[in-house]
Figure 1 (cartoon, rainbow, N blue to C red):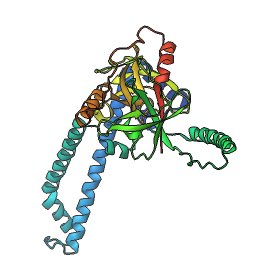
Figure 2 (tube, helix red, strand yellow):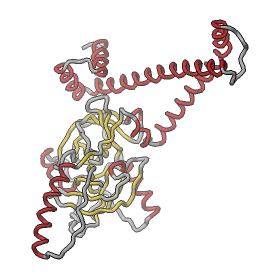
Figure 3 (cartoon, one colour):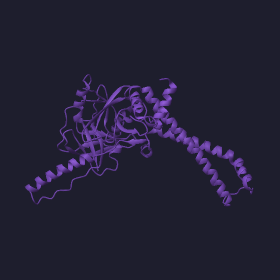
Figure 4 (cartoon, rainbow, N blue to C red):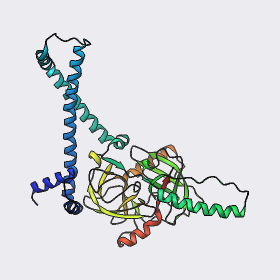
Length: 375
């Protein structure tokens, strides 16, 4: 497939004019060819810029109409010319001023965009962007199962003590994924998963619901540190994976384990770009299947090292997922130690999964990845 045909296919893919079979073939091509995948991302960004330019032209036209309307109402001073002559006069009189103003506005917009993308992932702006979707999910299935368990437990308790009065069960409505970073019960998830939470719990691989508390939440980096406070938590001797201070290499295979359902779900892909949405330098782009509920899940490389925290996806392209780079876990913990020296978290730096087959790696990781449940 030559360059022109590839570009034509990309345009039809983005516009949604491909047939089902052709789209399936093209999506498979994206997964196996990082260059094609990157071309889709770059072309999508280019089309966005064109749309913004069109919006700017419409705004300039609206400003011209407003100026003319105010002039006719006498609210601003303009020479009294009749009909078309007046319109032509206004156009020629303010053409240069409007061009300068439009240039200043354009330069300002570019400068602000560069400043925001260079300093931090604009969390609030991303949330408002229809193309950027955080992968915080619902836990309706878990709610139904918990309600059934609560009814059984309540019946048993009432038979033992008819006078006992129990608090109503907490109904969790949203959630995501988290994973241990310290044997003493400290775990990481995405900050947007627990935002505005009233109650937070985690569920382990055995289905046990454990109470937690928020230790640190960094919205700029989209990282939250939780601590399991439940007495039923049994501290493991060691964690099987390490937390890397550097990211994965381009095209390096990666995989994740998360909770888009009430059971752990495995996904695999590859590192597609070193930067995230619109060039965000705090995140990276992963070509992997992810759904609401995957937010906060670990992204691991073939050696079983955590290289990122899955956080969001691009809604206008298939398989374009973004992850906070793992090195920022170290930054958030460093900030935490400055404000609370009693917190002692020892991040694992080496992996005991290197050389194992993928099923064995996933089996050893499963007990350290939790469903995060929020109400």
